[in-house]
Amino acid sequence: MTVTASRSASHTSLLQSTARATLSSAMTRSYHSDDRVFQKLRAAGKTSWDEQADPNASFDQFILRPFLEASLTALNRPLRDLAALEFGCGSGPASCFLAARGLKVRGIDVAPTALEMARENAAQRGLHIRFDSADICQLTDEPDRYDLIIDGHCLHCIVREDHRRDALTAIHRLLKPEGLLLIECMIAHPDLVVKGNYRIDEWGVLSIKVEDSAGVEGAFESDGGWFAPHRRLRTAEQLLAELTGAGFAIHYQHARQQSDSRKPMLMRIRAGR
Ligand SMILES: C[S@@+](CC[C@H](N)C(=O)[O-])C[C@H]1O[C@@H](n2cnc3c(N)ncnc32)[C@H](O)[C@@H]1O
Image (cartoon, rainbow, N blue to C red; front, side, top):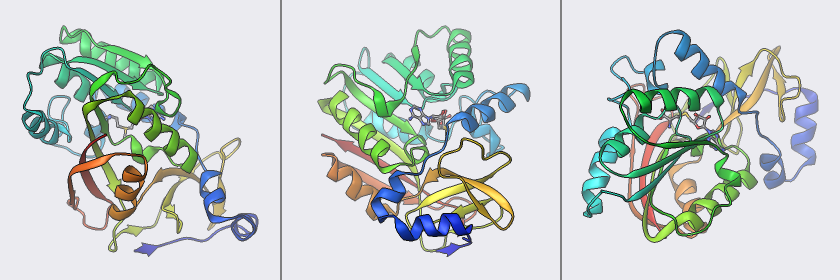
């Protein structure tokens, strides 16, 4: 893995004086930056997260769609009225896709602009979807509620070890015993290149350059700029171990390169309890 990482003296001493697990769980970032992405998308007349990076993406042709289609086929059950939860639903492309196929869908997100866009997108399609402002790490609803739980690039947004544990515990509790968890997640790999506006540390905490570090937990200085923890890039093996450690059985896994092979790979996982 090619890593560009330099740190301020205070960050370095924090590194040296803190146990590894404690350090990585002490680093997070406010989620406000993701909402700013949705604000910019909306101002540009765009409707979904994927449209930022992929010129071929649209609200209906979202990146996760082929995996969802294949997974619904693999479910081999009538879809009507199956209960689905999408955490980190963003502006709702996957939630709308599922609702249009007859599932009863609830989408949750922590970004207010994303939720406003999701409600607008569902209303324009005549779809009834419950979109709630909620953090998957703190979801304490009653157990065994969902036949399907989906993650379209949210799990890698959860940086801290304790938050990730809380999220996986909640997902495990909410999934019905015969239910299916679908994940698409960025992962680290040996050819990963991190430079410019990004830094990565030895625990896979990917940080991004920020204008203002005030109040941002885990912010550090590097090469004259401020960086803040942004994403968590496990390797494939680490991600699978994290899921099995949280009690999930892995049914399917596939990792693929993005068009630029120096970027994080994308891993697709189907899992159950
Ligand atoms: C990369 S975006 C993907 C959005 C959407 N799934 C899509 O594919 O268009 C990740 C989303 O996860 C949300 N998110 C991050 N952490 C979250 C958390 N702890 N609970 C719920 N949503 C979260 C962000 O606000 C953001 O909308």
